[in-house]
Figure 1 (cartoon, rainbow, N blue to C red):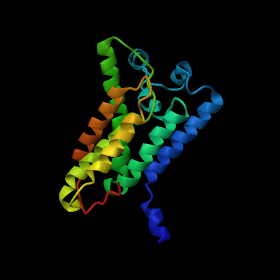
Figure 2: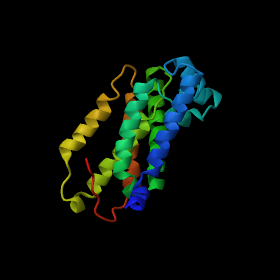
Figure 3: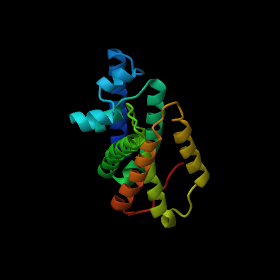
Figure 4: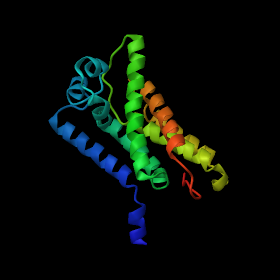
Length: 202
């Protein structure tokens, strides 16, 4: 029984949470995680720096930065819930690929929107990637509807509300959230093939 539980642990989800927490603690030691300048200097997404200075690494590094403990807690709490639910059945490689594509793609969509609006802001956080995992979960539920028999829609709605209202602080990058969710849906439609009955303990 113990070995079975170990095998069922969401390894990628656990690893992502650990990395995010360690990065946050290191950033707290080094400076102020609620300082825009400090976050920019340590890899925050800022499209002028990406396009004009070739700092493409920001598309990835911004996903591991958080503005304060509450921001980190909200994102890691939702990532933990979602990852626990789907990682095993979705597959670790598909999971981590969807996570990064959603996070990067959400940042790109946000940058394009800012360009159209003539704006530029420093963007940070894993929420675009987390919304991508939520999008993948929606597709899994959709593709497994016959095998599952029924989906607990109220509980799924509660989860969505928690994700949305858990990220209601001022300056939320809604375009990154939307882009991440849409890419998560697209990735899951491409990558996921139901093989057996899936149970979601929502």
